[in-house]
Length: 494
Image (cartoon, rainbow, N blue to C red; front, side, top):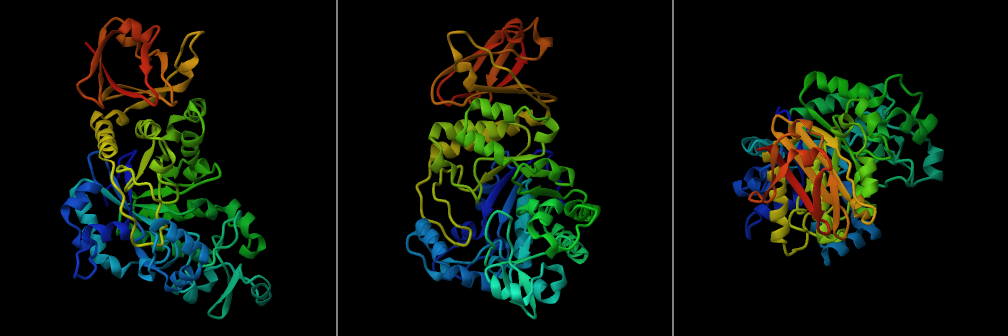
């Protein structure tokens, strides 16, 4: 197993869609992960990427696919993404899993092993999905171990068929979260059942032999208090130990370097970290960057650094709209600088660098042709490479205050922070507004006060400024940034 860095940069890939594009050739049968050309792997792992999340490798449910093909709302979403949709374009949901076996259409276990080896030669780890809350109705798990599921009664099946279904000789609950109707294509595992906890631990140990990390779908649904509120007496009494604390402890004893990443909402990131997750989604930062102002983002970044280092920062993933579709070009670049230079893991979605705008439902095996944005692609790769090459994220991070003038409040629109460590001193300033802004940023490095300093823009490379340490540590560095502008600076004594 490859141990991922303390704050990994992860590139998410819709495996089926991507595989089809990089291997499809007229007149030849579909290819598997073992047939991917080297240049396609190279494109997934540009400098600065530490791991690739191959989303959707497990065997999908035929029963779930049939439901999707009959669902008018889903068919509309497919048509919105693709226009004309053929049945063969629909593989079913990667989160309606029949078995945790690599799908034969992707080359099976041999193909996945080849993919992992290809990534390892490029210095990148492999992350896979795990869906702890539910499985497909045609999963062998549901038929062979009904004791691991939430049960209903014959009366509940008859009175509420949208919430219960018969699997074999048992009435089982359909999977759900507490704020939405039940999902029609899955059955609900019982997080309180001791046998289900043991089975989950064993399954994750097995998955840990195939990858370097796991992203756990909707992880908060299995927490004892959430599960009890969702299912009440149907689940039985809550065990003393929380679900994830019990499961992850067992897995990490076998795979101590395995990385666990939780999809998490409802401000439950901290308790999930306490229960063993290395990283949790930071949906709050996503929402603030897209919909709120610099002051809101700054308030979010006042949290303790050790907590922030275990968050996953992102501007898009397969559940969110494409960033290029919802953000003006300048704001997208500014937000990307924020994501790349604050503490924590960072998550980037394949196609995001090139400016793809169409969010493709995960049920589909293809996506529409879109004209790439070469300038945006170059910007993202330059940003990731520059941050990685600088080594700044190996140091300690600190949020900085920006000051201004009575007749110029634009400094409120500027965010700033610094990194200090073995790789040196680095300063980031971002104007999170659609208008020019100016500020003074007092730097915390008092040891520079009596020296002259050179500031080099690590994104541009050949731009530098000379400033006195007395100015930098006193009134502060003066910055004037255009709308959505940013500086990522290396600060070195002269």
